[in-house]
Image 1 (cartoon, rainbow, N blue to C red):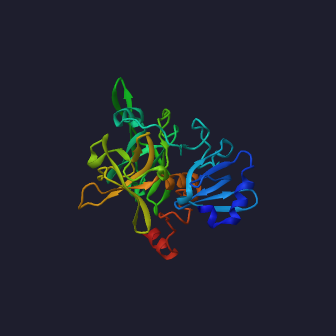
Image 2 (image 1 turned 90 degrees about the vertical axis):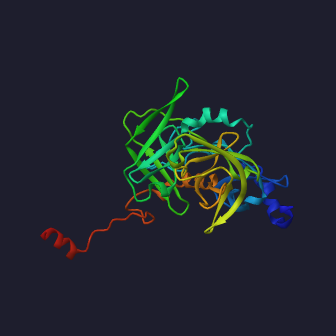
Image 3 (image 1 turned 45 degrees about the vertical axis):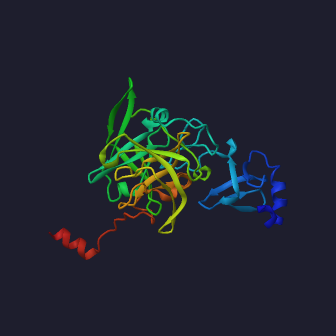
Length: 322
């Protein structure tokens, strides 16, 4: 068992079980760790148990139960306000296994949360993470663009009506994980329907998944398949590989499990093959959202790929002379 390899840790686990209002990490060997989760990485979870910090490998974790006392938003800056999302979080998350439903019912239930993101050069997909207009898409969908529009589809008498919003602001970007956080700033914009972020760690190879997006501009297209593998390494990053059909225009859209929870963000495919699509694991999305201030889109942010420096004085003088 995992604990047998780390006997010193067993005492820590026993002591940490007495912590009040703590997150609980259930291990595969029936043991558990109680403490405050500091960060969740792709391959590990970092937990503060009161007097030390533990790094627990993902492979040893069976489930994570977060305390309501520790689920307040991490960020309260003006750029990233605290939002009420039912539970007071910036986004809804569920790491428990929910009952499976049929795809048709789920599309009717959560389809309004999926949007189309347009820029002057093309389009992609996206999805709302809360009711206040914050949405996730791929970085490559908005790369080099600031003039964006978002098309939202609302169910009205059994039909979807399109609404276009042109006041769209880039909040945060992570070009290395191909993620972007946008916000609709249109005046008098209503509350939006949003998704629940699930757990890709809970997926098994062969589980059924489905995507909603706009492949090749064919809006509101639903495709389904299975999880082909959970750990496909490409350029140093791990992706979910799926047989769900992914095409240009699906980029930035959600990959759902049969509980209607987002387990990944579709972002690419192998063009010379069929049924070889890839998605960013939702754990990376949660990390991006939890630390969105670190990825804030700003010309003052050294991590921002768009930094416009002042021209050299001689060049600037020549421009004025003209």
